[in-house]
Amino acid sequence: MSARLRFSYSDLHQTIADGAAQIVASDFQFDVILAIGGGGFIPARILRTYVEKPLIAISLARYHPDEPPSDVPHKLQWVDGVNNMITGKRVLLVDEVDDERTTLAFAIGELLTEGPTEIGVFVMHNKLKEKKADYPDFVKYVFVGKDIEDVWVDYPWDARDIIQHEKDAASGGLIEVNEEEAQAAYRN
Amino acid sequence: MSARLRFSYSDLHQTIADGAAQIVASDFQFDVILAIGGGGFIPARILRTYVEKPLIAISLARYHPDEPPSDVPHKLQWVDGVNNMITGKRVLLVDEVDDERTTLAFAIGELLTEGPTEIGVFVMHNKLKEKKADYPDFVKYVFVGKDIEDVWVDYPWDARDIIQHEKDAASGGLIEVNEEEAQAAYRN
Image 1 (tube, each protein chain N blue to C red):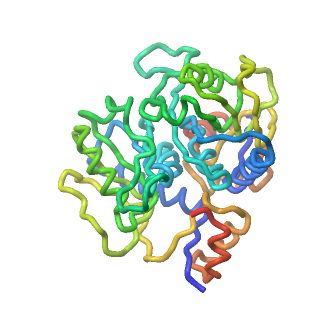
Image 2 (image 1 turned 180 degrees about the vertical axis):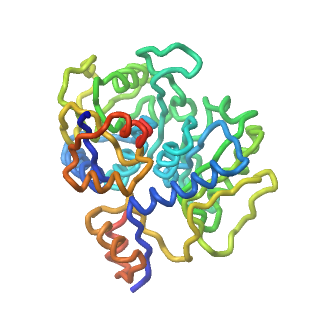
């Protein structure tokens, strides 16, 4: 058995609304929302409802499908063709979770070469754990929807059975599951 | 007063699961999922759970922010840098709703110039109404999650108050609302 956190769509939407309120109340001004796909697609789209800015996306995969697994994410889609919304602009980078910060640190490092004037970060969830990288000084604003404990999270968009997922989420969120069954029930 | 359809996140996830089952059962083979943002971001990300293909995105706005309103969508983000996943490839284009088909027809027309070998379409909802364009013969597969009547739809990701939205959705979906209040409650 192992522990899993299951949040409902509605919970997550509210967490993003809470994060958006922090962004709006802050001094951070930005020109564009940049979603880090796949995980950041849904949080970024919901966030856009509260902070009305243009939304564009990059897509990072954990590794290149044709190469051996590595710690360096693979750029499935990068900012080609939308550099004009990055270079000399203020960018709000959005991802679903700050886990070990590998993806975020990679995305920020690569984005810096495009010459933005500012990069802010919004993560829906921040796992309370040690990170493999610090945010560079260039990143002055980091917004967190909610701090969560360091357990595996099943997000609703990865659920093969959404009815069961929402039931589990409604029953408190943190549940004990059979590892094999959980892996079959989610695409993550 | 005016009528609005309000679907819960869970409803929509299930509609996409139903659509995915049609795709999997069909003869349509594809290499990549191409989301049409902003509306297609969330449906495409959920769809990916059921059809495991790389997910990339374009983003179309109703019109250019610096130009007079027009019927021609504005390409906020196009396929620059990901042409290698379009040219000579089979693409599944995903949007949230086929309304008058303006956005979809535009996206397909533009995509054809990139030389894909096949384009299939998945829409979460199809509004039962007259369309401003037919799908070109090149598009052999069109998958619809659910046909819906021709009324305004409030999607959960556009809700400023998600608790109220989910309540309305749970009470049957089609509701009569005060137009001004509804416009303030949703970003659409």
